[in-house]
Image (cartoon, rainbow, N blue to C red; front, side, top):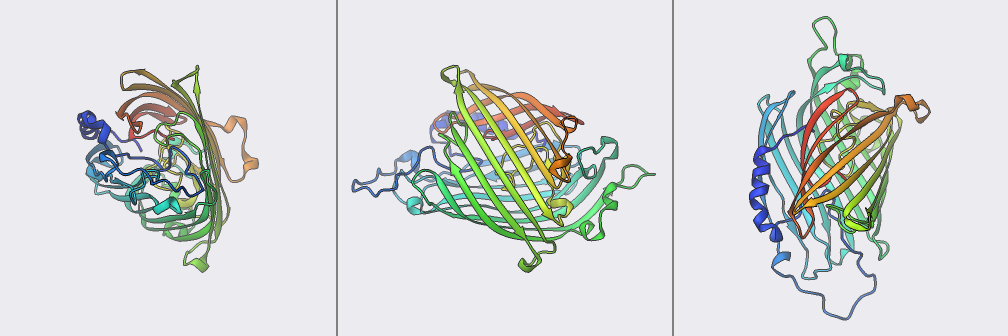
Amino acid sequence: MRFLYPLLALTLAAAAAHAQTAPVVPDIALPEAPVPAAASTAKPPKLGEDDKPNFIPVPVLFYQQETGFGYGGAILPVWRFGQDTTVRKSNARLIAWYTQKKQSTIQLTHTIFTPDEKVYLAGELSQYDLSFFYYGLGNETKSSDESLIGYKLFVFDEKIMPRITAHNLYAGVRYRLTNTTKVRVLEDINEMRPSLFRNLPLQEQAGGMVSGIGPSILYEGRDNVLATYKGIYLDAHALFMGKGLGGDYNFQRYQLDLRYFRPLLGSKRTTLALQYLGQFHSGSVPFRELASMGANIGGSLYNNAGIMRGLYESRFRDRQMMTAQAEIRRNLFWRIDGAVFAGAGQVGNSVGDYSLSGTKVAGGGGLRFRFNRRDRLNIRLDYAGGTDTAPSIYFAVGEAF
């Protein structure tokens, strides 16, 4: 999402003097090191001052063409269950904002490790009232077909995953429910041309409920989830959406998110980060649930990753999507890091529709400020553009992936 947060930047920069006790605001709160499987007779380390629960309120201010000025705030608690410091920290993120054009968002995401890390919980509970530019479906949509659409969206998403090995492997079940209502065309393409959204089936134009459940597996091998130097991350799941679960549509979703990190030039000052993400569907998929490329507004769908930074939100959407991105991160001096990144991908009705000429690209560069050195929490400011999307400024807390 093309947000510019001047108040947020000032708040976080002013808090840098307290970086050693600042809370973590992770994309996915997972550990820096595996937890041994065998029980130990030694007493676990006790909590210190830096391990006590933390809360940080953050003001939010931004501007977008389709929303006008927006304002709100965020609360970012971080805590640990029990007195054992080897238990990984849990966290939540509550963000709420309202815009000049009467759009709003209330988003709550969380990652929780139960005592002794026997169960991993992660999910989202959100309510959106948004507008966005719609270009139609497929890999070859045109910017000249832009129209403005509005909708309300409720999201409940939860993963419940018991630990199955001592080395960062979890498996369990995921349930996801979305309810899209009050979908409407706010502006047609022009006075003579209606929005392409009006060509969709009437049921999809009305929105509806999507409810699905399925298996999920996670391998978390990164040394640090906020700004990884080394490690592998893999998240794979399947969701089976059905009317028998209370939804209005029957379809299936399969997703694979694979990330790899390693130091370059023999030093942790330079890091190579790679990500592949594929999302594939079968069945009757409504437009709002199609795979889409473009920076996302956060939440659980793509594990909070920034997909194809430089493309407009959901600029290209269809049943199948594959995308990959690479980033080189370099410590420049003091707490200032630099990064360059590029991504490529495409969508299609089927994977067989993909072609080399149909590949969409995005990329850019930016700066990071190490707000919390202990936990490698960065403030990220990127300038990026992509296929049929003018360059924009992207501001966020934490790395894109």
